[in-house]
Length: 261
Image (cartoon, rainbow, N blue to C red; front, side):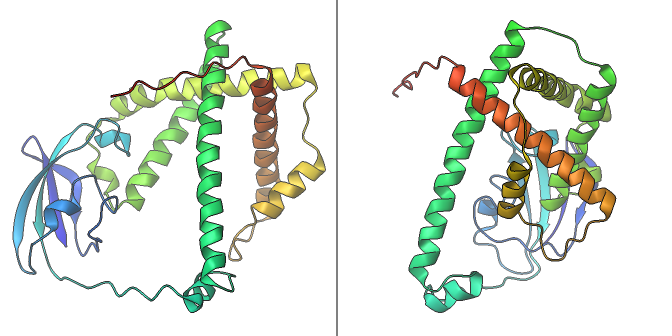
């Protein structure tokens, strides 16, 4: 498809996209976008209006109403291979389809547990920061704010949204991400101090185990400096993880039943 986008009657900068291939399924593009393409034929131009949810990612266009003028250029059919042992061998190092299914089940379970653990970690650190207020260097908050903005722009590019089409000004972006950046910087300072006081350390075997479970892609080649930076980042991450695990063991956690509809 080709499409152009506007907001409040004004074209979004860089909001024209050509030859974008979009799969008709939820989640393949912006929420509610692909559903409005169903039934259209090649050669048709149609205008659709999309109001994005307030929690939409990227955050710059969350809650905004955008009008798209879309031209359907070509319709293709997705050919899905049969789910059998040959398919399992093609997608990875699996001998049978059962092996692949078991792997996917384990991966989904791991991700669910990881999401629950991260949510718990955030709640614990949030409470610690609230109960122990302190200031952090503004320069570090500014640096982290820049990092978050760049990450958001990168996600927009991956979704096929032109970077220049952001509906938020630079000031609005900074105002949105600065509190998040400040929390993250405070979290790092707090966890580093707790690790120091409690004697929590990262051993060479911890780093080795992490590298074995998170190998680089074969095409990734790092220079000596990049390898050193990666090792330092891994060590910092593992130290935070071990400190958060320590805090979780010490925390008094109260389980609350969700409200029933």
